[in-house]
Image (cartoon, rainbow, N blue to C red; front, side, top):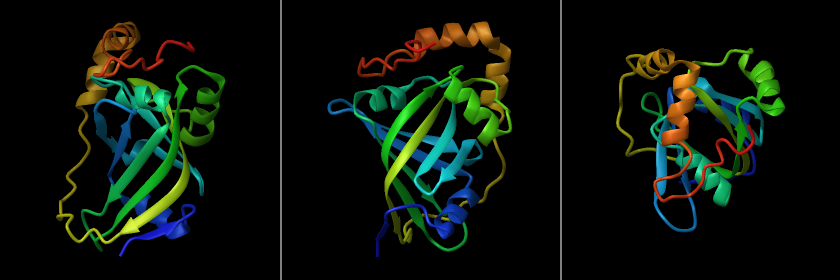
Length: 185
C-alpha cells in the first residue's frame, strides 16, 4: 500500500497543506527518539524537495540537538478527516538560527515578514524521500481551532524573558546533547 516518490508532487503539497497538524521525528545515534506535534500554519513548501517551518520556543529543543548530531528528520502528516492518508517526508534537516541573514530572508520571502511571538528558529528539511500510505488506522477527529496558550505565554515573557528561558531550557537535549541555539547569534 505504501508508495514512494523522490519529491513532493502537487497532490502531496495540496494534502499536507490541508492538514492542521504534523509531527516531526528526530533522533541522535544514541538516546531518546523525539516526536513533536507542530502547527501546519508554521510550515512552508519552498519547492518540491524543501520544506521549512517556524519553530516556537518550547520546553525543550530536541530537534535542534538531533539535527546538529546527524541531521536525520522525518515529518509526518495524517488525514484526520476525508480520505485516509499518511504522508511522510524523509531527509536531512538543519536549523536556521533566528536573526541570521538566511532566517530574515526566509521570514520575508516565505512568511510575509511575520514572526510569531516566541519564534526561536526555523527548521529546514531537504527531502530525499516522500512516502504515502493508507492511513486506514488513523481515527477521525474534528478540528475545533488553534490553541493560543503558547502565543500568550511568549507575549507575557517578552524578548528578555524568552531569552532567559531559552538559555535555561533550550541549550541541551534531555540526553545532554548541545542544541547550538546560541552558537551562531
